[in-house]
Image (cartoon, rainbow, N blue to C red; front, side, top):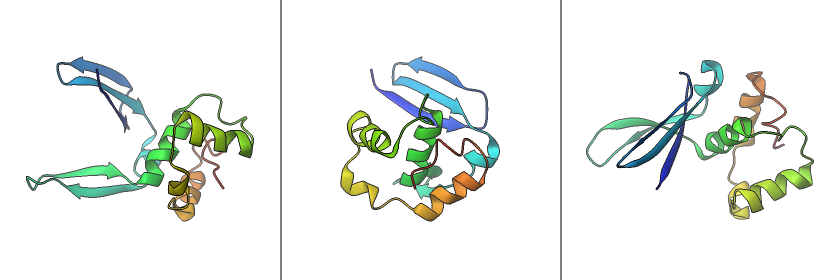
Length: 113
């Protein structure tokens, strides 16, 4: 069964139905609101979606035990555990990551740079 993961300023929860499993993880509003982009579907409906940098930082701050990782271990986590394409790392926005760190929410977990 497929799982769609999202973040929300509301309480965390998980729902399952015939379409799949949907999990929502809580982030404080000051952090949740950063890095969202407005998208538009083929039917003309608009939605909010995380930038690639925002999606990765959200994953980092919601993961357990990342604060104690060295740079080498962090790179291994990104490339091996998450299976992130190494070429995508250069496309991340360091300015955007610094804004997340400046929000004061889990600064050590969002320290890619």
